[in-house]
Length: 212
Image (cartoon, rainbow, N blue to C red; front, top):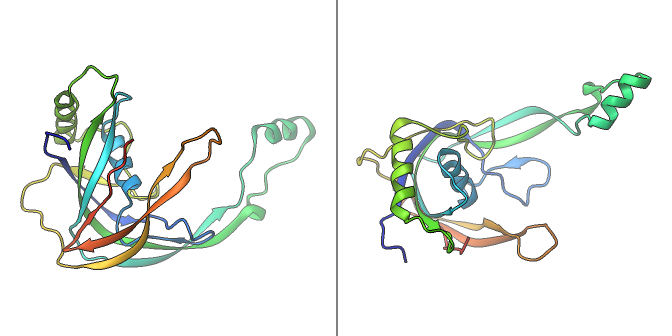
């Protein structure tokens, strides 16, 4: 257990989609962020190879509401090899043939408080307060390495410090199996999904701790 209290950041946006992995074609969101999505927000704000983020919980600040979308997507993309061949022999990439419509069930008008701790690598000589202070300064200034997003890159997120008056919604429900992370142990290079039984309790989702 860390001797330091968890760091907190507020994130919000008009839309979010935390895609369920069992949906192969259509994108269907979980009702709350996954641990990996929350960690992605934190890493977009501040990350260094000397530490990893351990997401502990997420507060849901607004009622869970859904929106249904139809979007044009492409089934494949042109490769560099094909492009070179077309330049020499003629040809082109017909986007009309590759375009397809897909359905997305997303969340709308979302806001969360993410609570997480810094997990410093064993071979790192820097103390955790160094990274904690750097993160807090970046949040206060609105600085980030890349723009955070809520599940899908097109759903950009705003972020800022917690003001102290945030309260999670008064809702509780079983969320069923939720993706926690991918386990990359072994030499296959392919991650094995790790799930846990998620539950929303008074607007708060808590995630099991994993050694990153």
